[in-house]
Length: 355
Ligand SMILES: NC(=O)c1ccc[n+]([C@@H]2O[C@H](COP(=O)([O-])OP(=O)(O)OC[C@H]3O[C@@H](n4cnc5c(N)ncnc54)[C@H](OP(=O)(O)O)[C@@H]3O)[C@@H](O)[C@H]2O)c1
Image (cartoon, rainbow, N blue to C red):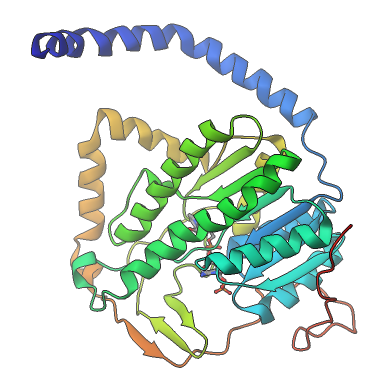
């Protein structure tokens, strides 16, 4: 066996490289044709039903607006209900047909059963489930002072995707719908100070890649592996439960640049409607895949250089229970009609069963 493996170690890599060199142009051509075809015959979303978790800020909010422009029925899910009401109004102005607001915690299975069940009862079907709920962090693992935050990070970033997906699968299968997943470039390019987040995102990728095989063509899966695009994510505020929040102080010592949240949301929803398996934003990050395979040392030296400079270690995590700060209204609200006030939620009729 050892001899066989030694032989294969010697033969398989160069033989594969030669084979790839010949197959690559053909594959690129086929992918381009496929992309062109799917762009022309992309999914018409008019009147379809889209549930978005983590819709109260950042990427989730902008994804809601992108779907709204496609005249869908929306179900907005997050824990901060007051923000969802303002986003609902913006989505209606942008063209969404009906918008339901549902306060729920995605790490609680019963909450997921409630919001998916209510959405299906109200609209009669479910077409896209967009999982955006997440919690980021930036602290050196060994400097964490409160280990109780560890399972919360894994719960929100991993189980917070798995539960809604599990509950939604039968309905998505029925409508031949789509799962849209917000992973991150961290899933394959882990950065220092984001150990638990990167671990959860890597787990997410493997979970959805496995699911892709299991659901075959009945349910589409679009996975976004985007880089830093901004938003509230690293604000360091972790709403633990009503009335208290876990908070850590953090400052980004490496300034990241990247596209805008709006631009990313646009490409993500376009990719989902086109039926893309992956949305990469920005796509030049892909070049690091080559470094990972052929020159991992270069990446490792770069990260060490960036993260071990004296100024890089000036922050640490403080895990403390604190009174929750009143959450701000939705980011950059769109011009609303004179009668609209985000402070007073408009009346939403309770979800009614559709016959
Ligand atoms: N921003 C980036 O640069 C970036 C880069 C790569 C990947 N991503 C990924 O993209 C996604 C969106 O990121 P973002 O920057 O938009 O994050 P964000 O602004 O922090 O939004 C996170 C959302 O998740 C919701 N949420 C958190 N815990 C929840 C829970 N237990 N139950 C229900 N909702 C919960 C939050 O709403 P409530 O607090 O109201 O519940 C909020 O709406 C995430 O999956 C993130 O990992 C972001």
